[in-house]
Image (cartoon, rainbow, N blue to C red; front, top):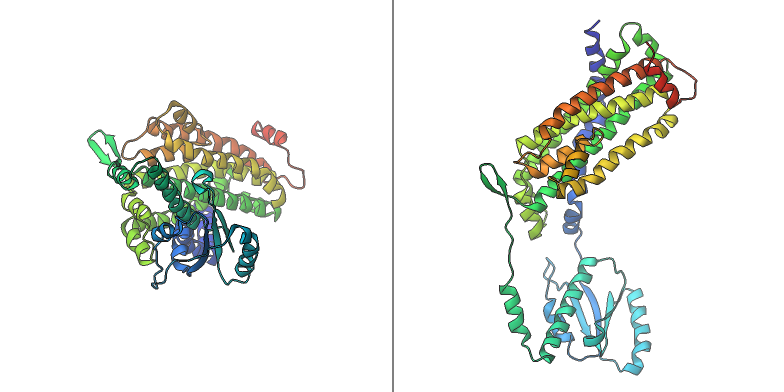
Length: 434
């Protein structure tokens, strides 16, 4: 009978691994990650912008020429990114002319207009009206140019040379090169690259745990509702059935995790070339790509915390499936589990910034949060292991074994209970049944 658990593992793994949904999902999952974390940059390169025409009403008489000079950018086809047209308008005619401009914007004859007031140096406000104001990069460019112009003129009014001051500012810029101190010396490491890598890996663990945990829950509910469980239990114990299901579905998740891991290794090696090929030449992004270090240590801990975290939460999802009678009831009972997992993910951001604090240590030792938070501490601290890393391996093993034992006692009773409204209080009583 002990070998029959392998039949359960084979059934849970092979039958699902052969489905088109799993194959397509496995192939598309790495692409989905790329779209999630790099899609903004990639699509900004693929969606080619067109030249935009703006009217500039400069009531100061001193801003327009400098403003145009500071925004000389061109598109890939050689056209100017912005076409500015100077409009000289008497103050008493401004409202009437702006009404005309609004019609031109609405009719797509121009993209927008700027009104630079005569008291700009004091008010420091410029009116910007356009067909669409969601392009924050463009707004930032305009604000930086106008701010620099105003700053220069204010300095000149104070008798200071703006160009000399700017030169001193530029020469005084300091580039902070960060290095992590290890037992063997210093290792150059980027805070941004470490955070992004940890964020991506924690997200992968979160998604795989929730997705495959819910698959396990639905599998239990399906067999229970169709009365298949009674037939299966005639030749195998409930513990073997539960173990076979968890192991089989865990293997599915590990299969996808291996593929994603290989994809990340390839991305670290060739990501910069790929981004440049797509036309993404954002210096900061390319610098981060060069500094990402996805080591074997990180991948090894990632596999471990996925396995142990999945077994832990899969047992809880299986318990939910055994207690309820339908997927609708299952959706309600699984919400506390999803909330617990999501809380752990939200804490990743804080823990990665402060991985060595006592609060980060104790929170990452809570079994519900260990798979995500301890892994996040390890990923961001690599090549140094944070305090509690090895301890969490054994505490998580012990707590998971205890949890599975408790869940198995609920599972053995719940899968044979039909038609009765589920109750957590009653499920607790099932634990004491012999």
